[in-house]
Length: 252
Image (cartoon, rainbow, N blue to C red; front, side, top):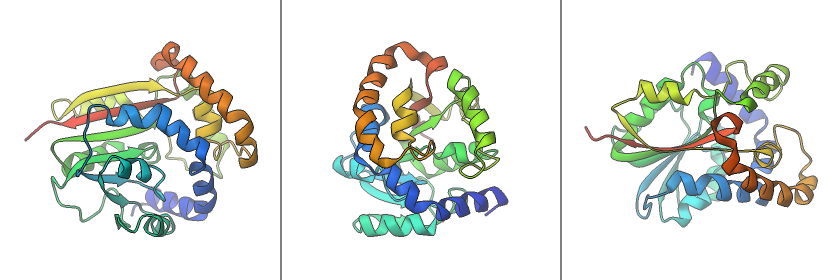
């Protein structure tokens, strides 16, 4: 592990219980199902397919992928989160290794998902996507959700990252999707790129980041989930907090 990875590992080991509580509650799960999962897997049949959940945490997305009939392997650098993953999903494989340095063979997974993990990896985001490309079978899909650069919310995100040193490391930043598309042109087919995320993304999905008390979420979440659905068609890239993507590896 390099220094930045080690810092991220220490951060997530330290805050694993709090992280799991905020990202596993029913309202955060409802957000993922309404605004993320459908776009990530649109047009894909996951039944019987091998899916690597890279940077899986304790497995917040795992129940959804299992519902689709996928065969899941979780990969995360945090021992504490991987142990939680193993306890919850004994039917799944689990690997406690770095997304950059692991023993996964080439062309071994039908699909790879990363949910809100790439933005923790600067300046090595390109290296991570290279590793995803290596692991994917030809024709397999890379499914992801990330905060993206070039938006109005990203201006405020940069300020927040600088202020909030207890939850964020210096290497964290939004992901430049246009750069990645140019970098991997001819290697991925960019099947879906959807921009979304409004107040529900900030205060429901990211209640952990904004220190929202869990007991409050049941009061404000239904309204904000509705509001995000209303706002979504009007936002575009500039007004949205996140990008949801599905990229298909072009066969070798």
